[in-house]
Length: 575
Image (cartoon, rainbow, N blue to C red; front, side, top):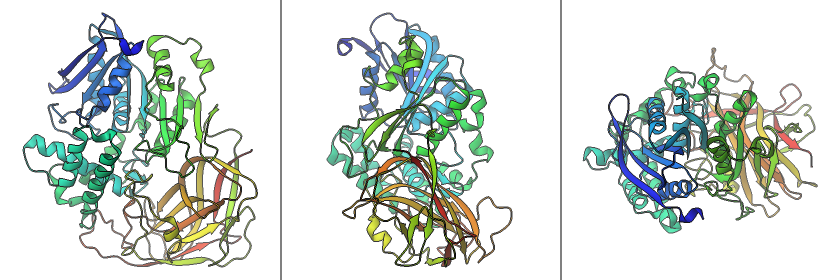
């Protein structure tokens, strides 16, 4: 019956902000007098793709007034666009404007994925009085890692560069100048033409954006890429602020303002999303002290795509706004006062367990029944292994990391542009150490945060170490599970001494997957993944700031002996 509800749609409503700037806004609401609870989405992307309007109409027919607003400086909104920073005050003002409208009952929730999730957390920092609930999908709440910086000091280069390139198209149009990146402009035209529903057009968009991004990767210094200098000036600022505790990031980090955010939140993420860690950290932190937290994590990357050859095509689509979808039940309870038994009946956590390909309800994250199990690194070239047996006297492994020939990586983690890397070819490289269990006799479930405690030395003061957990199928197919990186010279008070072994704790983020019997658990250790991460030139400089392409090869040693036991800590769930 909801499909037959008549709607009133108002496009291009100009909503004033406190400084007089007006933001272009679309409103979708039932034709009746109301009043209705409001669901607000704020984002910087094209309103012409039809996707947000489609979801807005689905939601509005369930008895909500739905607002979709373009951020300042974007698609008809006045002012200058600068990501995230204005969204604190603009989000506050938009919430309070919505609460005052005659068709509003004064209760406002926020919804949306990616940037629309970041803008929710930004609004929550200001804590507008009429903001009742949030539903941030596939985003982080903390800028210290898992956003533009994948780990402290390590720029998620492919993501930061490609996203900034994407944002130049509308800014060029607004200023009436030619686009400096025609590939992104062509991709934007496909989106404006509602090509998101056509797989062939989506593939063409991905190709155009990948090519346009790769065209900028060899510039030095990267922070001064000419195509971004005028139209995306924030890229330079993001490169210049590599410390998440910097006030530049803290002012827009909801994690830094957590004590002021007392709201029920529906957290939704994907195991292969490049914001997954921040998604899970937000739930874990909020659930300790705040009622009404819900977490859903599925098998998706940032583009809603499943990444595994054994994926279940019926796993579900995370942007589900049907009346019985978990997020709409959340809003029905908090904004409409429906479902009085919601808190008692609705599970706090829903996880998709890959390998088993099932949804499972849980009471907490990480799971209380977790058995934190150490898989130690062993062996030498040709016979490297992972086992629960502690090492004795073993010689270290070594390799040479040459930044002029980095290990290849996808543009963004989770292969969001359908540009996966051949992990078999990677494993054959001389600068990649591969440690593996024998074929498993019984299945092993890994659900929770994964950490590598790595004892390593380098011939240089500042270098990187990367780690990737891999599921190797009986036919040899290698499937990435989760990964991490550490920059050895970042955040240290004393320089690292070349040749001295240090212990590094590398977060590989989290997963929920079952390694089936006959599969092997594999760990790849190296020092680069480019252009996923900005490569470390080993010179003490960052490629974002270095004025030349000078690099220095580094000899790396990985230790696994009784005094320096490198080990992979897996969250094993008893079966």
